[in-house]
Length: 345
Image: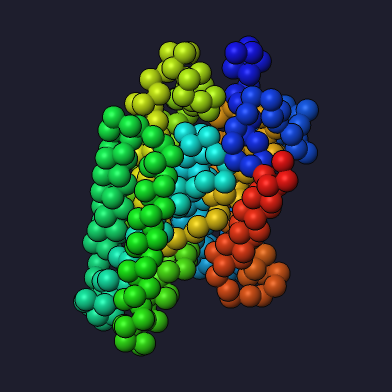
């Protein structure tokens, strides 16, 4: 194996498959990745300050606490989705996959729909946020842990089979949710529809604190294993040859990715294509595939995109729309472009 490949990490091709001869490319190619991280960090701080203070200087004491909670939610969710997507793409060796493909969003939609269908919208709206959060996170973690241990923990240990079974379960969950939504009372369906779009308005402080702690711990773990993740991205054969416990590290990455997606989805709702958008943009901007740079670049891009996008929607266009709708649209376009580029090679 070429020494240069080991040092820089394998570069994924546009069709999603990583190959050793796919050199990092992009507008930042040739620029030291550390400078890219520093520039993005300054930009992220500027965007945060702009969002907190724009149009609120006359009543900063009143408006600042309200906006601070929303900003904190966007930062935590953005970092969680960005890091989980980069980690998931590392173990699957594919840049068009995100943890959402494992059926987390569909399971979340099924939980919301089933709760309103069996308990009623009034009862569901009266439940404590911490109780709903605990049930949703527990359901998604139990599902993902059982799936990973069943497929990847068995003798076959096939990641492709894990992804395929996850897609099948996602279709099953989505079909069940759609069936319940068609037979539910139309007035109660409005409650379900409202919960199926990500919203950063008025997050619960207790849940936000829990999510912040979880995301911080997972990010710290990923940072300590960044060199092993570089080796893991080379593929199973190379990772085993270089002394990395491929099975154990892959299982750990899958579980922490599931944990990040579960807490972020339970906090604000599902955002399907956001991770795909920021992760692929991070590879281009960083100009390298070393996790020491890709992880912080992806996290900073996620913060800039979420907070900056919300600020533009509210203060420039004067729109009161949900930012996740715009993100899903752009992320979907990126997904199509990646598929088309892969198909032309």
